[in-house]
Amino acid sequence: MMKPLWHSRTVFSKSCFFYKEMRKVHPNIPIATSNPLVSDRQDLNVLQGEYAAEDTIYQLKIKDLHKKYTHIRKTRPDGNCFYRAFGFAHLESLLDDGKELQRFKAVAAKSKLDLVNQGFTEFTIEDFHNTFMDLIELCEKQQSLGELLTSFNDQSVSDYIVVYLRLLTSGYLQREHVFFQHFIEGGRSVKEFCQQEVEPMSKESDHIHIIALAQALNVPILVEYMDRGEGGTVNHHIFPEGSEPRIFLLYRPGHYDILYK
Image (cartoon, rainbow, N blue to C red; front, top):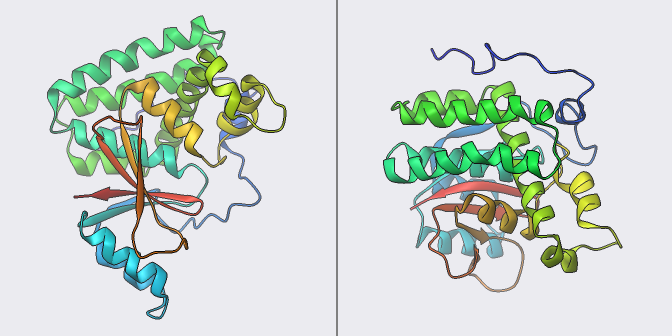
């Protein structure tokens, strides 16, 4: 079994903002702790059993999904599902794509300095970045899919990855604050939005988070939206628009899972 990634890392101060935030649970999000953080790959048919047979809207939309996808990998509904789904799906794809792995590794390696140059405190973020890089390097060493899944189901490792992806999202939003300010509601600045809605663990993600992370790491994402909207088809959106997606996610109100063709 793989040695825990954080084992050799210096434990950072518990007064660290992100350490405290990562152990908080948003009161409005029920967490099924019996569910794995990231599940095994499952046949897409499992979705049919989650809705009543007479629930025509969802049953039709599941049939529509079947036209494009064959399998699903579920994530725990804990408010961190977008980041966990993104992290696992992309690292899984790197196991079979050495060229993209090297590109992604270079971007990830540089990302800590970019954050520090923006004003993030290095000692606050370095453990999260180290864990992120450790996992990428394990993929480079031909880590098995089973080992990757084990890592993502280790709460400490998995949460460190989520925290770092949240930081990258926050960093990109703040770098491009002039553009994103127009999408922030409530009279908040982009920085305030990031402190309240991006950086804290268990805060759910919307379009603005997806756009920022996809562009920060140059990893295009396609999201299939399945809700109770009229019609028997599932609508999708690609972030950023016009790109060739590498990751496919299913969104149901408040939750993201991974899709496979």
